Length: 120
Image (cartoon, rainbow, N blue to C red; front, side, top):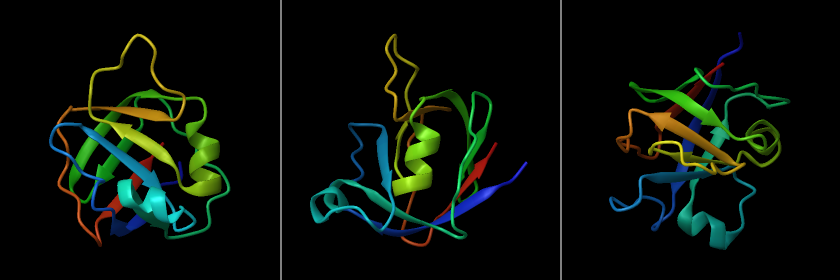
């Protein structure tokens, strides 16, 4: 089981809202408009694939979350453009294909320099 880590390089001015328990992740290739709303992560090693599934763990610094749902596009999007949308909410009836739904459902504290760890 390979653990994958990424470091937060930038956090857009509209990336974190207390009203919306969502974090949108992209890598450095994100457009300027996406960077306004996104958390920019840089993987510590080139990513060829990332196999995540229900029960996988995501950590932001020392805050650990369990994946309750992983959309079918997440692995490919993370590997190509560093993209996934983290939802700190219950899994809806129609979860989004690029979404990772996490428990517990509290928004983490995140800052530039935070380390995101993906544990399959």
